[in-house]
Length: 451
Image 1 (cartoon, one colour):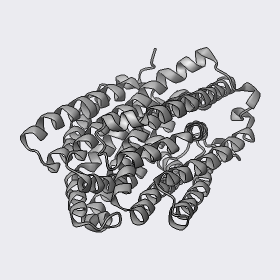
Image 2 (cartoon, one colour):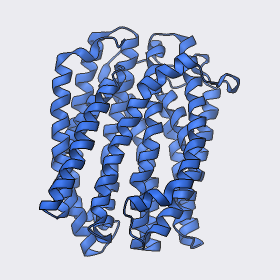
Image 3 (spheres, helix red, strand yellow):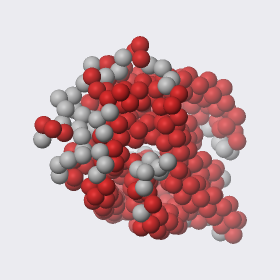
């Protein structure tokens, strides 16, 4: 085992048992993301229970917008991870280090820009989304406070992207657990004990994110020489930055495209009133947990594909794709079944109002039987990203999950003005994207080296 494991926790996936490596990589990440979801949910639970439904609606309406902003920079980190993993798989230390330092320079710049945009434009954007006036002041204060911590979110994701690219998913887990505990304790202290408002929940999240960013960064400065970060070397390397952005911008746009579509969906949900907003917000939180294993397997698939293409092992890549995509779809199906059965109990955790519960349960029971298709689509996207074909998932998601989803909702809600109509947008577009990806995968064009 020694030949593809590092003392630092890094792992080369270019030899050894495939399924075991994917699980070994995905499991710590899943635990880490579970903690991340827990502290996002802690915001909602603490806000909902201490500050009431209006405050919960404020947090829920801000979340799709926050995902939009963070999704873009996350995607660039993922794209950079593909580049780093390929050079790491090929044992090309010089380019591995160039890619790492370029990504960190990008992260610092993007974090500063996001802070300025988030603070300046949040009232305007929340108004454009049709956030009800009763909720608007709370949403704006939550959103602005959250974005003061932008640089921490962006830099943490960049550092985590580097560690994952070299196969280390153990250290990010440790740092997430620490920051999650800090977040929940501060949430309870600010909101529960001191009685501060919604903004203090966002402030608690920002503080905890700065902690995990600092831990991650310090770890990288003490790693193996092959991928050790040196503060003096952090700068833009134009050819390498171009390569990172070619992979990263499509991945980031894919995230943002999905978020833009969800902002439109959220605007349609908002039209059904505060109970529908809170019910669907609760469903989205639960679905966030369901997506954890899917996301973790996707990162394992992506890292596996890029490391093995770097090491020029196409047969191993194909085998890994079959194991990874089947694994993520089956796990998602099992989780969806549990959620379908437990739906009323899960929604009741967030809000006990009967209208909120019925909205949430209806939404959940409409989408969950098709959840395995969402996992399959994301799995295929991860394969394409790992193979350096990041524009393929971008185009598929843009057409299926954005254009068709938004068009369907805009037209269908006019004819059948019910919340169920909105909910059906998800199964329909998941089915469509699954078909498109399968057809493209079978052509085999994704395996050819990108120009």
